[in-house]
Amino acid sequence: MKHIRKLFGAYHALLYAHPIYTQAVQSSILMGIGDIISQVAFEDKGIKGIDKGRVIRFAGIGLIFMGPVLQLWYMKLEKLNAKSLYARTVKKVTADQLVAAPVILLTVMSAVSLMEGHTVDETKAKLKNYYCEVLLTNYKVSEFSLLSIDIIDVTYTDCK
Image 1 (cartoon, rainbow, N blue to C red):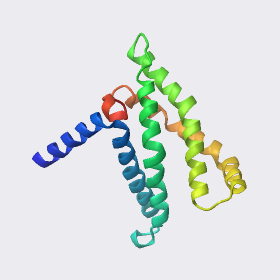
Image 2: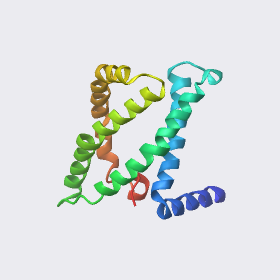
Image 3: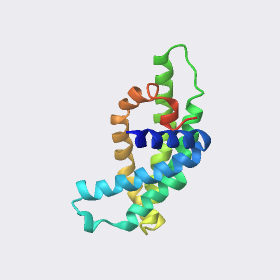
Image 4: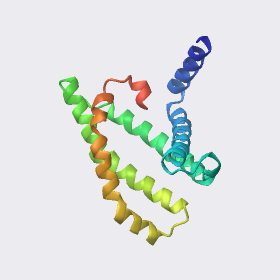
């Protein structure tokens, strides 16, 4: 337990000292692990069938795009004020879902398609076929943001 506390303390110090870099690395790791889980658990590829290139692409998106962008976005959201915690939370979730979600999903879906070797026209077709479905699915689960966006300490929601 002592080692876990020490590791958590080091992570916490890094997060405060270098929030953007820390979130970039963290997002890279989480997106890479998430893709491995997706391939093994939902695509039935098995450990030996994992597409390593895809894992690297997802980790790269986390490192270069998702980590830094989300860190900066949540820092901006943190500045929103309202008269009550509930009103503030609703404001933050609304801004997050109406401004950030569409842009981030569009960017990530485009980047993944292009990094898979699809042409710009093929990527446009994929977006035309799937973007709205993905965005609507995001909105269906966004109510969980109401639970976390103002309850979890700012430090751990990508903010400083």
